[in-house]
Length: 164
Image (tube, rainbow, N blue to C red; front, top):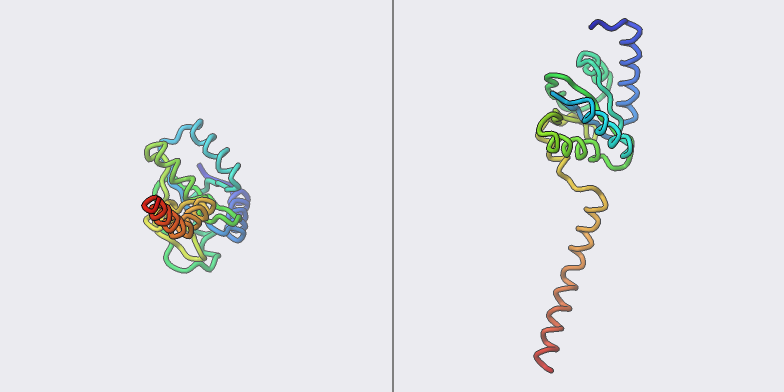
């Protein structure tokens, strides 16, 4: 269906504004996604501070051309949406959409993204999606720091039991 020129310019302005404010963005392919699944996905993304917008590929490419990103833009086959965040957790859009892709058995798929001012392909976007959230990473870091101390306490307890 054809879109009027005024509507195209509105969509293009929205996409360009979104890409300027975004700390990270991912390109999402969706196929055979039901309205109920799409609605619940959008609600969850919105609750996490992630914006999600479906647009024509030509308008997405035109909006990307106006930005100064490094690398080559990924292929965008099929129906495409853009999800982005302006928050501190730059892995959130990729992580949440990757989880939805697994839950919906391939109805949602990461096609690539923009991280640290450069385009990333599908494989890199999936790699970013598998990075745990910041609180989990902090917990893992504390566990690594605590591990030698815990080992020393266990060794001292074993020595105490042998002496008793």
